[in-house]
Every structure is written in structure tokens, then in C-alpha cells.
Image (cartoon, rainbow, N blue to C red; front, side):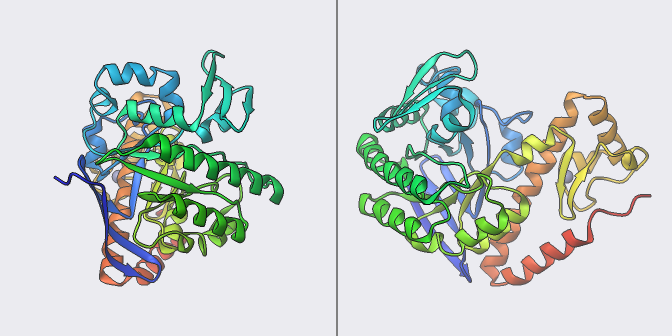
Length: 376
Ligand SMILES: [Zn+2]
């Protein structure tokens, strides 16, 4: 097993790349999709089942874990990997984004952010230094810089001010992270949809120097066209030889478009969250299993899928347990969705390696355009 964090690109096809991140906890095949384990669990899934879908790495949320059960408690119990029963790599976010999106009253200063917990209203303080400490206590393999991310649309001045603050916080994050062999620290590019601000942010981050770079501040309400417009240049502003991570993305077609533009890593709650509301993602697009058309349908959700939901159960059964609010409904649909997402990543990795990614994308879009199978 490697003692250091490494990234190697084995093939490129256009702007798309495929390769491997190596950490002491294991290897991550890229492009990689990271399921989200918000509160030290991927909801409805055992860790072994998550691994079985093909996931090499999970994402944990600093904001949630610092509030409950607290980073200190997890550290005392041996760290996040042992606590949640996942021995492969874990990436943790910095907490900054969720402070902005979830917490109540908050106050932003040069020092950091003070906020009230969404759980019990208790007051907390998060700074670059405290975020690094929490992520170290959790035992995260890939640590994210503490940053500030404005919701879009926002005016240019607000985006510039926020980006500059995030760059000062990135320098403080690096300082506080220190030298931790085998663990990686990623910088986060900001700058909204402004190309020159993105370039300035990329330059500032590279002067500090990181093990990987995230494109931050997207998937915050700008829409796919604007996001792709930004991804046409943003990944190219970051170092070629380091992993590039697009945070919080997305739907299957967002993911494919991001990989085509040079992104190596992504995370999103969508496959697990939508699995709990009766939504399935398949090669033919989105299926709402709650719809009455599935009530008598003996066919699997996707006849080519090898997940337990498709191998064992009919659409009629999935419809029934979803409508009846049985626990197994969310479990099966989450399993299917995570399996589908990992199949998608595996397909892209193989196509990039073979130099056939353009044809693969055409097939991906053609099948989705056909839509779900005809009702019986
Ligand atoms: Zn399936």
C-alpha cells in the first residue's frame, strides 16, 4: 500500500481523463463518484453494500459531524473510518458550504463564521484552523480548505470579495493543515461565473500549493448551461497533474458533461436522496416508481442492471413498497441508484481509456432521449 497521496493519469480523450488516486487507505479510480455519508452513514446502506456498488471513496460532512456526535467524540472512538465501518478513503468537506445553506443566524468575519446549529440552536464558531482540526480529528484522507461560497446569481463585487476572502482562508488552511504524510489537502477555486476571477483564484491557490483542486461555487442555482460554460475553462486553469473535483454535482448528465470537460471527482446526495422519494435513475433517464403505471409491471426497473433491486424485484414490488412507505423501498432504490452511478463512472473510465468517449456520450444521450420502456 502506498504511503503517500498520489495521482496518476493513465489516459486522456479530449479534455476527459482517467487514472488513479492512491492513498494509504486504498485506491480511487477516476473519474470517481463519491456517495455522500452525511451523518457517518450513506442513508439506508451498509458500508459493504456501498463498496459493492463500486464506490472507492465516500464523502463525510464536517458541518453535520461537528454538531452531532462531534469530532472530539468520533476521535475518542478511533476516528470516522472505524466509527462508521468504512475502511477505504474518505473525503470531508470543510463545513463552510453547509454553514451557509443549513444553519440559522450566522455572522461572517475575516476570522471565520459564527452560526447557530440547525439541530438545537447552539452557537458555534468555524474558522480555517478549526475546520482543519475537525477534519484531522475525523481522520479524513482528503481534507478540503475552508471557504466561503456565495449563492448565484450574485453581483461581481460580492463574488470577487468572497473569492479573495476564500484565498486568504486557503492560505490559513494550508498553514493549519501542516505536514501530514498520506493525507491530502485540496484547495477550492471560487469566482462564480467570472472567467478572470476564476483565473485569479486558480493562480492564488497554485501559489499556496495543494494536492488537488476543487472547482467550487457551482451547482448553486446557476443551471446546467451556465455551469458547463464555466467548466469549459475552469478545469483548464487548474494544474493538469492534480485531481480536479467538482463539488456537489450532480445529475447523470451533469456528471457526464463535467467529465468531458476535465473533472476527475464528484459527489452528490442525489442518488441516495432520490432513492428515498421513489425516484430511480436508469440508462433511460429518471423513473418515478410511485406512478400507477408500475403497479402491475412484473419487469425489473432496468433489465440490464445487476443490482439487487433489479435482479430480485419487479417494478410492481418496488412500486408497492414505495407507496407503503416500507423501509426496504428507500434501501433498494438507493442501492440501484448508487449502482447506476458507479456503472456510469466505470463506463466513462473504460471509454476514455479506449479513446471512444465521444461515441460513449452519443450512446448515453441517445438512450436517455428514448426515455423509459413503454408501459405494458
Ligand atoms: Zn438496478
